[in-house]
Length: 364
Image 1 (cartoon, rainbow, N blue to C red):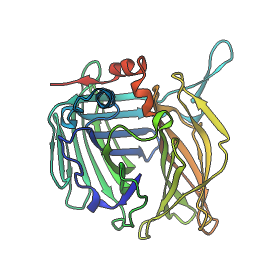
Image 2 (image 1 turned 90 degrees about the horizontal axis):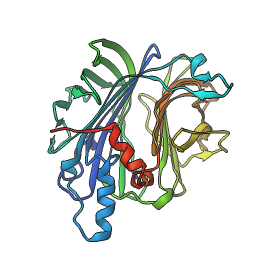
Image 3 (image 1 turned 120 degrees about the vertical axis):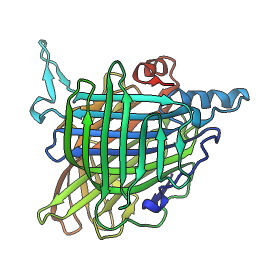
């Protein structure tokens, strides 16, 4: 995997009709009061859909892989996070069950033929739009039909904090490129749900951008664990920590960033996982893990059992994490973030691939 930094790298990097290509623009936010978690993704060649299986199948039979522009998509989810005291519920038999956050809005719509500006300044898919603002931020105007009934509309602004980030490219394999565009943003969001309720909140947010060519490398063991968090110290200084572990090859890193400081990234020394969890679909992921920045001494511990799951699936899971740690001076840091686990090989499973169709809609 290759890693790039900064908004100047946020332009479109694949041709919309490049066979087997994919690209996505990811935004997330956690409200200041800790009550809401928002995720919005714009896709070109939506790889977490039947597009992935179509590409893989075409490799073995001499057919031309489908065009990514036939598989554009917009994903929106808004969840209300339960208090930590009720994340685990107990059934009448005394067994504990991990609770999901309440889904207040959800849409995953696939379209043909989106519009993508060559410099990445504007994307239009269906009736939803993402555009760059004058302060190098992003404005998302969303109008999406819900999975079953009703419509979601939203107006969201992401404003990067501090100086634009910069850093030297990291990694050598460019089969998949991850662009760390804005580790920390201030977000203002207004979301109107299908039941007519308008939910407004300020939040801390994050934005990145990914692109590459399918199928993903790594075979049956391919997949990743990723998490980002915004932490505060005793003096109020904000730190963004991003951890990544690739499960199909020995690749992992820890990235830290403070406003006004350069990006620090390194292969991370990871301690043994202390707690694991298997969701109802058999997907394993970590509930507790420790990452350390060897040269600086920074330590970050992720604990995922304090809040409910945002998304459960056979190949993908997303949840809110509590992150604690220390900076290079040993001062304590504390914050929250969002984590995900992904196993793309399961997208080709004969049962799971069909179940996936219950969670998206192909729109005209």
